[in-house]
Length: 250
Image (tube, rainbow, N blue to C red; front, side, top):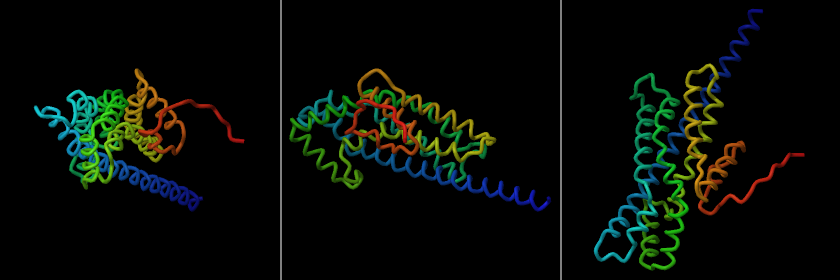
């Protein structure tokens, strides 16, 4: 009897250890992808937004109208600011430099309060993309600037359309990561409730409405959250929601 109890305890211990390993893997993926994402935001701002906005303010500007510069980049700096702070705390937590009471769940929960800035960005995304494409088609100077910027090392061969879509794609990526994290966090762990609240907050951002692209993003986000293992790049600059049908596996 004692041996059986010992085996059960050993099995439970092994299960918790396996969960902890999987949990750590998800956390590492969250931090690594956040670092990569923030690097791309910096490239979008430093290589595209800053010089183009500067040109738009120039007296002899023929590169980009001021209105287009405003529309194309929207509030990308505000989006970048909240993610820079989030990444900073994630990395500090990873290094053990934060209050021991802080958890990955509490960091996500607290920082996602500031992610309301994504709503404005997502609402303006389609207009931004269309404005950039129209300007590229009719203005050779702008087209040449985009080509040259794309070749910069910081951009990693990513064009402006590839970078503008990044914040739109990042929201479902958070949903996927937090859902995975919740699955490998024991129900009796206090962090489970924090992760759940963070998940609710980021899902609320994904459920936008009010214009064509926002509604399309919301529909694609809903599909993403209901299909297990659905890739975040379902939402891309080349996709729009057309319709959905229910299907059953036979």
